[in-house]
Amino acid sequence: MTPEKMASEKTAVEKQGLTTDSRARKPRSEGTPDNPLAAELTRQLGSKKVLHHLSERLNYRYDAIQFGVTPLCVVLPESTADVVAAVKVARAAGIPIVGRGAASGLSGGVTPLQESLVISFTRMTRLEVFPERREAVAQPGVVTLKVTEAARPHGLFYPPDPASFRTSTIGGNLGENAGGPMCFKYGVTGDYVKALEFVDEGGDVHRVTREAFDLAGLLIGSEGTLGLMTEATLRLIPPPKFTRTLMAHFAEVGQAAEAVSAAIAAGAVPAKLEFMDRACTNAIEDYLHLGLPREAEAVVLVDTDGNDLNTVDAELELVAQACQGAGGVVKLAADPAEADALWQARRSISPALGRIRPQRMNEDIVVPRSALPQVVREIRALGDASGLHLVQFGHIGDGNLHPNIMFDPRIEDEGAVHDLAHKIALVAIRHGGVLSGEHGIGTMKRDFMTDAVDPVTLQALWNVKKALDPAGSLNPGKILPEQPGGPHARP
Ligand SMILES: Cc1cc2nc3c(=O)[nH]c(=O)nc-3n(C[C@H](O)[C@H](O)[C@H](O)COP(=O)(O)OP(=O)(O)OC[C@H]3O[C@@H](n4cnc5c(N)ncnc54)[C@H](O)[C@@H]3O)c2cc1C
Image 1 (cartoon, rainbow, N blue to C red):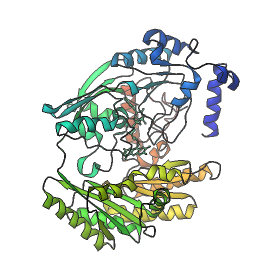
Image 2 (cartoon, rainbow, N blue to C red):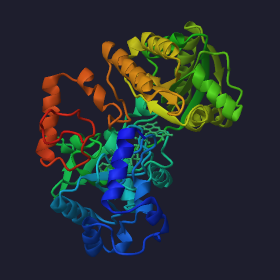
Image 3 (spheres, rainbow, N blue to C red):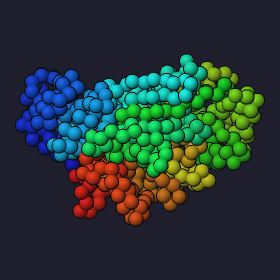
Image 4 (cartoon, helix red, strand yellow):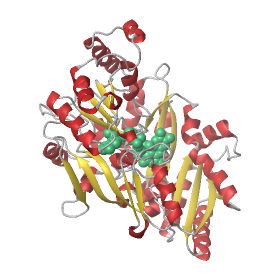
């Protein structure tokens, strides 16, 4: 937590007249709510849906990487009607509202920047599959994996597969327009949304499809800043019958990027296409001892899939040739068990990196595929020059890279971490790329928006925000950089 945030944390506690000692003595979930907002919400929704004790609220100030300000109150709605009631109470009190799923976000999306009402959707878990329509209707608290599991018995499949799919929720996936290893061939969350229900900042409920102004499209990826999504109709597809897997390793990072570009240029459309650099594979090897090539500067993991085995094999062969052509050493998985063992490396990145340093600044740049070799080399050089722990991996088929700066605020200077992150963002922009492919802007990349987006377009984004959230009460301070003198200026 930055000193600035710690100060504001202290203010929040002091305002409630609580000292550390009195907080410790106060029993959990007992007593009357500490503030009028919590009292009114408890009156309207009942005490089982409202968390007001500090020891409970403290758990709702963070996402997977950042801390924010402890919320004034947390509501656990069980229906759209509960969300409407909570929004109306917060609006009447002039309190900002932060929507929250599983808080696995990596850009500060759910961290309140001021005393807020957090609406946590984890109890809204209704999920129905309509096989004849190839659709699932999900409330926002449904865990992503549950959609896949519910679709399977009907011979259907839900492709968006963020690596966090065992914990992330549909609401959070919609909020960030989450992608995953399969996004190159199958697309991201937004590609599977047919309709949405959302509650606006005034508490009105809307049902929107992808027609007309595509309001649903506007809400998807808006990080809780334009409306609170309370239900989604999701498209399901039949799963592919066959999958083949290979791993290739390279003596130089740029070679891996060259191989990917060459494979795609040759016509391959892999189902999954993931990249890890040497720092990343070594962190995994230290953690799990899977037998990954420690000396390789880069590793690429590829799946091809489809309903015709010959075509799937031929496509894998195309990728293998491109990897070898770029100087790579290729290993084909002999069977599904071996394929799973190879993918275990990718699935283990997060815990493995946590062993290097406890905190990370997680970038999510997307660059044109043709620029990938140069971009990964430039970022590696920046990392080496900085002396910080820089690890690169990502959904390289989409040009989506996750340079992660691992740090410990007790050891590394957070200013230097921010500086390196900024330099990486500028590399992406210089090569015609963007700041975020799937993790969102949140607070983490908000300060880089003025580098990435021209002033006229930024003003257009502000106009959209003001049109849908005139009072600026939905997740204030996220995505958009401060507008001098404007009503949405960040605290
Ligand atoms: C180990 C790990 C691996 C990851 N891998 C991937 C990956 O491969 N691909 C990827 O895309 N992401 C990945 N992520 C990031 C994260 O899991 C995704 O962004 C995910 O979509 C967040 O879901 P969540 O339920 O945790 O949302 P939260 O973090 O709770 O919220 C995310 C955003 O959505 C908003 N929001 C939540 N619910 C609603 C709602 N009902 N209405 C409106 N807004 C809402 C929040 O305000 C916030 O801005 C990873 C994270 C971790 C920790």
